[in-house]
Image (cartoon, rainbow, N blue to C red; front, side, top):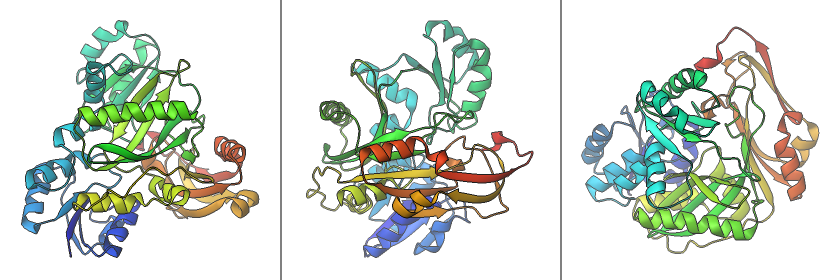
Length: 408
């Protein structure tokens, strides 16, 4: 029985914890939140923060682990690579994962290697950002350098908003740094999804359409993803080649990735993020429905040094999506009202994480999601129409109170 250390025990990480146990491994989790649900599914739990690299390394040494995984967690990805590298376990190079996990480092890497990249720079000083601000073409995005789930992200077109939005970004940054980057106008859907490399070669990828809605609080938080990807095949192949070039330059090994990619009206590909981890919001589960490929199982095998050479490219069959149940308003949660048509014809899996009477916050980032759905559709047209208009079909009823949305 191999010992697997899994970083984090949040609800979204439970499927991977359960899968590792079902595969016959001894599963240990560490997390700074002792009440996280993953604890009850693991064989062993340790109260250690997943961002404390040295503490996790010390724990891993004492446990004599055979592998380490940061499933879905961006915060834990550098720690997993750091510990694995120190102990000679299967992983990507730590320095490479660190570059992928920090937006300013990744943008600089892309620029140095002649990828398409918006003008961007990381800052830890508001004064420095103000001094540079006139050099940017408006509008610009202001983001934490090390946050995921679109937390702390804003779009501005005037210097008067810079201080407010920089402080907002910094409130979500562990490194206390933010990045300013010029806004790219996308053509068609933003491309998301997951992929997997074996010995550095991208052998499998499943691109999705990312869906957003006109959330006045944070319109840059994706509310879901859908498959099959709406981009023409030649653009998908172009994206694949650009990702492969990143993997080659960073000497990546065997493991999973989550993508955020923009394509402009000239078919230029912009790699916004390549995260060295599986995607959240049940993306691996949807990919399994669509392709039969179990990304969770491959991720666990890779961490334990297993053979993943049988993995190959499989195109999705049918039309699938995952949707994040969310609220535009903060207040007291009452219920989720789902249209009979979508409940009967589309929903395959569905869970709500909150109970009536609990306080909830408006959807400012993925940490404010109320639940998740997996759906199947009869056609691409039905899928895109419903995913682009989900508030018509799924309605969260909230009793408004004086809860501040900033708490999200």
